[in-house]
Image (cartoon, rainbow, N blue to C red; front, side):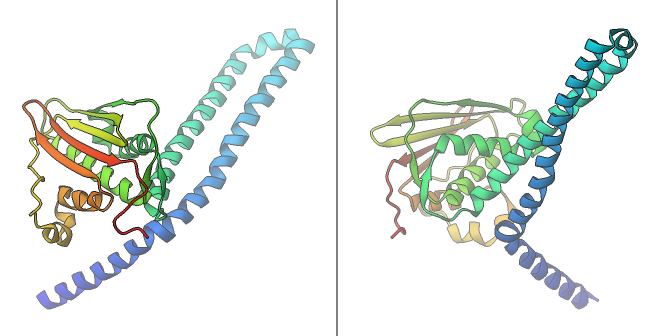
Length: 265
């Protein structure tokens, strides 16, 4: 019985990994494409219905004002209902955009220019799909004008910053004060991103001797993959440091404004 159970678990995990291997690059783009067409149809038709209804009631008001007096209550109800449909379809569209932007980013393996501020804002909006993150954590983003592009593979930067923010999110679960702030600085061909959180104290990951293989072998055990993030950032000559301060933690990411990458041809 135990052997049968073990075999069942092994085969299940193998099929699960096979499915997951196609999810980002093959399945998710198809899902997003199939959702986009009906969503565009709903948005277009709801806006058209709203305009047609306005014209319809205006014509009744012009030609049959006495009839319009009897339809006023029904008119207001219809206007409110259609307005709500338009509002919710717009809201659904922006949620869809947040979802699709994230999955397109993590599937994008081209070496390209990246707007790091836009990328971080997209990551925050996507992570709002985690309900605890959306409702319990106060997010503060302090932009700076004139940030130059950085260069790299978008999925690498998306995965790294997502892991840093999720790490903070997990550490804030037991904190009374839940606040995440992101600041940007730019000087001397260097962009600095400061991520500060009020979660449990960071375990230092500044030691270069951290066993990266241990982090990679069991990444599902925790989102605390700071060594992995640090190693991937290093490929872009990005310096990432971690500080546990008295009232909050700080992660400093220093990104050179250069097209150079250690493994890029």
